[in-house]
Length: 200
Image 1 (cartoon, one colour):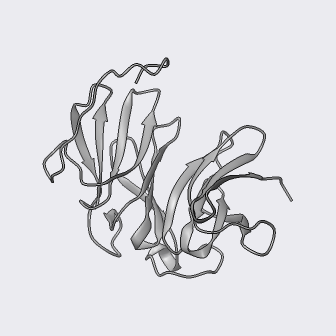
Image 2 (cartoon, rainbow, N blue to C red):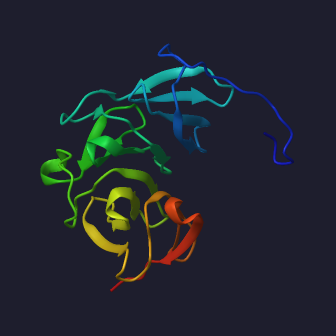
């Protein structure tokens, strides 16, 4: 759509073909390079397009455990350098690829292997991911009912969770605003929650 809400176009087919997707679960926009990434949930991949909807390539491959393998991804975020952060939800981890689509990092459980858990640095169905202008990464850790902040290298920084400092219940998406404010879609409670990150 245009900024005024005028319909401009659409693309996609419900299939496994290049350019198709089955349940488009999340979208990431690379504004500097004019690219769009779609978390293709049931096809267990992320697909990359230009702004006209022309298919460019696929990011990740279907699978478990191994680096670069995706299992029902739900969200994508692209930073200023073109790095692609993927909420690899049912592998219980976040994975990062460079602008060429090459894997280079994963976080979640020991060694990023995707074992679900509540400990610091672990996730259980992380459904949303975003980063702020300072390089901090935020994760909607849905089944753990919390939002987690990580450093640019994946080190645990902070968390906001149910019955501790905020009554979050099944957050599914997250977005970073200015001045350390984070916005979470608190799906089960039908609301948006604004959170504040501050250095300790």
